[in-house]
Length: 341
Ligand SMILES: Nc1ncnc2c1ncn2[C@@H]1O[C@H](COP(=O)(O)OP(=O)(O)O)[C@@H](O)[C@H]1O
Ligand SMILES: [Mg+2]
Image (cartoon, rainbow, N blue to C red; front, side, top):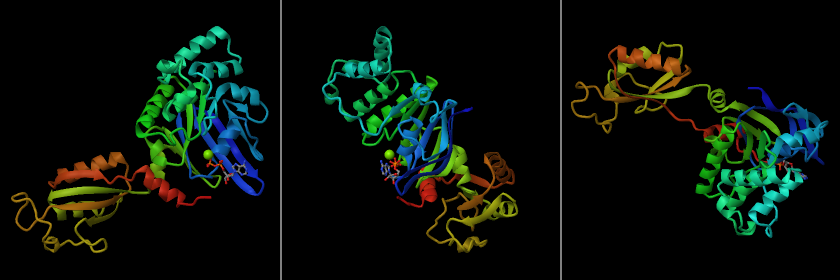
């Protein structure tokens, strides 16, 4: 995938406030790109520069190979921007609203008519065509606003906090809509200060704070890079000591401890298991308790499979083998350390 957006050392100050600090960003063609950061991080500033509404103090940015500084009119043709506020168009009907923007973009009347029909169908508002904008729910206004950003069929959609203030149902509808846009070949840049709001809908994410990029890449890569090792939970029904003996010498195993034991003192002595941890009757030989091992692990998923095969192959009985989940919210907290400007 080549980049549809590229920024190089993009910097913007407002007086003494440094809103963007040498930001280098790349958005691949066809991505759903989540731009995440706390309030005041510089998300809107970046988006306004990419849509040519604001000029950088220094640095450069390109959209579809066009410079936002030298070819702003070309950039505007390929970008649709949905700002974080809706604006006031209350005395207009839904179709008039789209028609107004269609005219502003110089789209011919018959093309405009068909486009309005297609877009209203896409955002599921065909039945509201003759309604006044002011009578729409917040979710509907958001979808109408999205339809408006697409009136000139841009390749890149930049949506500033579209999910904020939406109820869960409207949020799900938004997610579905993003999938459809992706299927249409659009690239979408979408911002939020709430990571979980975006986690499931994005293919790539960038985390920004105080105008600086903290992390960027495809979702899996980011998770991996911020998480030097994973923790495996291995439930051993029979053969705990054998499992530990097999795990410990491995280079990809950083540590093994029993879930029942204090974190520092992993005991080889099975009789040390607290009495409360009563084994299933007849499940294990006398004297052996089922045990959950927590394995700090640096290998990839392939070697995880191989590790499981080795354990089972050596006669250890395993009833659970899973990675402890480290979700995006944890990663976000880890990366941003809760700093808010
Ligand atoms: N027009 C402006 N004048 C002065 N400061 C601004 C202006 N717009 C944004 N800022 C400041 O720039 C920083 C980044 O703001 P913004 O890009 O809106 O962040 P975000 O969208 O991530 O919340 C903040 O510190 C904000 O207060
Ligand atoms: Mg903002």
